[in-house]
Image 1 (cartoon, one colour):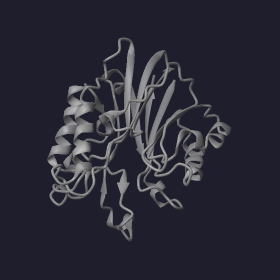
Image 2: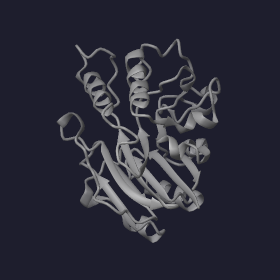
Image 3: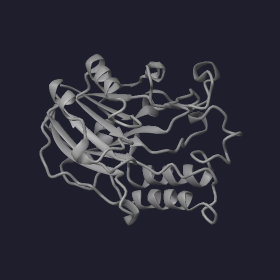
Image 4: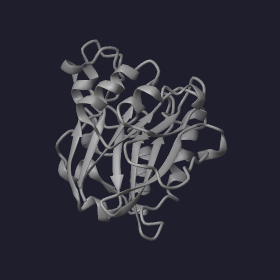
Length: 268
């Protein structure tokens, strides 16, 4: 079977539900992970998703900020895990388990803190929070559960590689691409035996972006993007990856998010 998993920072699910519906109708992933839903669980707009066949919906939301949700056409087979990273009560993590192609798969959905504007934790607590969050992610291992494959997706708010940003030199002191952040995320990946699926089929030096700032008057012409959204997996699933699509055109949809969907496909 072909399994497709998508991730998208939607920047308010209630505001942009028409875009979610459009994406699901056109691309029909088996599972979609959303971040920055900005919606408490009881107000999550499930009906349009269920009407499209996505009957299995798990969420971890809060009013006005953060929030993640995972919607699926495949049954979710175990209790959902919602971890409170850094113990501050933010809704930034959700994991589910489903079966596909004879495999059990744990899917982690993350929204890592953005970190504010100043890359110095002594004067910017938001940056310190981000670094602590990434440090805690180092405890997550792709092969932690026997008989379970793993996928980790989400807006990780870090562009780890030189070719994940429009200008490596100009962004070295900009939050999302500072050395302490990129080294931290690389350590999460290496220590947890995660494979960067987006770079498996598109190796450096080719540029990869998933985010373009709202501040750009003509984002497409300027093309000053960053790869802030990621899809990782355990090594066994990485061997069965067939393609990864970055839906750049979604950045030009009506009232868009500043992030675009990323879709990974596996032949199981």
